[in-house]
Length: 196
Image 1 (tube, rainbow, N blue to C red):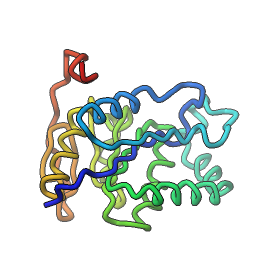
Image 2: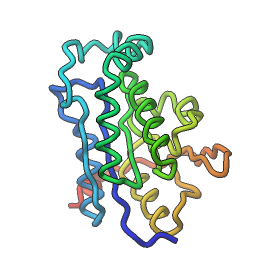
Image 3: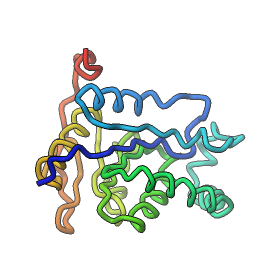
Image 4: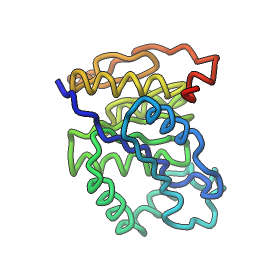
C-alpha cells in the first residue's frame, strides 16, 4: 500500500484556445487542493503561439496534428522532460477532439520514460470517444462526466492500494482487461465541488 501523497499533474494539451483559460482544469485543481493533495496545472497552449488555435476543424484532423507534432518534436521532448522532472505519479489530460492526438502522444512519451505513471484522460471528448481512448496502450483510466469526485476516488484508491480497482464514471484497465464501471451521478450542488 502507498500511504505517500502522490504528485498530480493536470495538463491542458495543444490545441485548445490559448486565449481561453482552462477553467475545468482549474476547478479540478482547486477541488483536490482543498482536500490536501499536491496538484500542478499546466496549460501547454501557453508554451507556443498557434495562430489558428480556434480552428476546430483543422485541429480535429489527425494528419494536421501529426504534421505539427513532427515539426515541433523537440518542443514535445522538452515538455516531457519538464513533466518527468516534476516526478508525478498521476498525470491527467483534458481531452477534446482538438487535443486528443497530443494527449495520446504525450501519454506515450511519458509511459516510455516511466510506465508506472498513472495516465488519466477526462473532459468532453471522453464522453463521446471513451472506448477508443481507453483502448490506447498508454492510457490507464478514462473519466466520463464530472471529474472532481471521480478523480478524488482515483487518488484515494491509489494512495490506499497503489492501484485502481473500480470507480463509478470511469473506464479502467485492470490486469490487461478494460472495465466499464458505469456512470456516476452528477453533483447538483456545485458548492460541494468548490470546497465551500
